[in-house]
Amino acid sequence: MGQHGSEAFVGLDVAKLHNAVAIADAGRTGEIRYLGEIPNTPEATRKLVAKLAARYDELHFCYEAGPTGYGLHRCLKDLGQDSIVIAPTSMPRRPGDRVKTNRRDAMDLARLLRAGELTPVWVPDAPHEAMRDLVRARETAVRDARMKRQQVSAMMLRHGHLYPGKKTWSAKHRRWLADQNLGHRASDIALGEALQAVADAETRQKRTEAAIEAMLEEWSLAPVVAALQALRGIGLISAVTLMAELGDLARFENPRQLMGYVGLVPSERSTGDRVKRGGITRRGNAIVRRTLVEASWGYRHAPRIRREKIHIIEDLPKPVTDIAWKAQSRLCERYRKLSASGKRSTIAVVAVARELAAFIWAIGREVPIEA
Image (cartoon, rainbow, N blue to C red; front, side, top):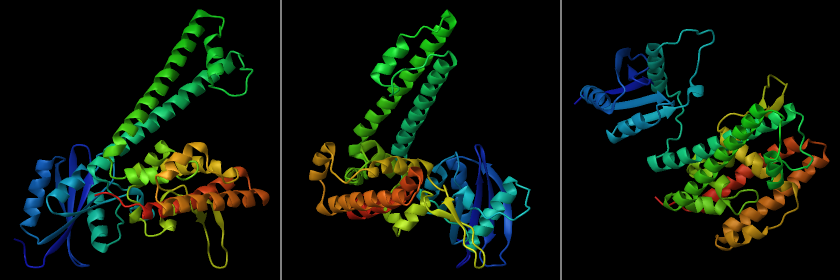
């Protein structure tokens, strides 16, 4: 055992193959030492913990979130150690500091962890992270399909073939594309390949959506997903996307924390008597922010319960349906007032999305989550 009451703070600069390790002794003037690099493997981590635990009674570990994921965090937790993961953007940086090495990063992490200046991110458990992987695979397929469709549209415009209808990528538009002759065999082959790429991406999107629906019953947040569908503009896929990215909504103490987390609060640059507010910060989770804005376009219209929502609402607790109806009444009125005041529709919808986040937070507090 370590010395009685001894405590140390360990910073890990994590990389693909090796982790740089630094340690800071407790106390404001405690020594900060660089211990070198260890292999990024569970065996090496266990050896490091055993070595340090023999010298100290209490250890605290931290590292920055990155492409290596949360395996190291879970390994440290399994070993009974206190561990946090922080967002790289939250690391304080000294102005003018242009030197960045693994050694310095590890020592800075240890020093800042000891000073209590690091804010941990929420770390999902393994099943939740797996669902989020699936949701993000769908996001990739959606983005890929959109890009492939844009490439087809650009090709048709370049060859002067303009679709006479109004709605593109409808069944009628697709038949029109299939009938096009670009005047050269090579161009026709290129168009055929581009259309096949669109079909492949759309098939992948449908396949991942079917997998999400099939896996939903096994997920602890399934009750919250069902409850969120009472809200206008939020269906099954968008509800799963929100919860996969946000996790347990109870970790947000109030709705303003959730609004700030997804970057929907106004930016501000104020000094003295001068107060200047700008557009939204766009910080935090972009997937959640985009999903909320897309859902908020539905609040341009008068409040009503659509036919496809009726069977969903019937199976939900009354407090949840009351919140959903209150959201419709307030947010529709909010959009109407902002539009009447001369705000652009895009600005009004973002304002609605900010308040929609608060109603999502409220519903999350009403639904118990299975452990």
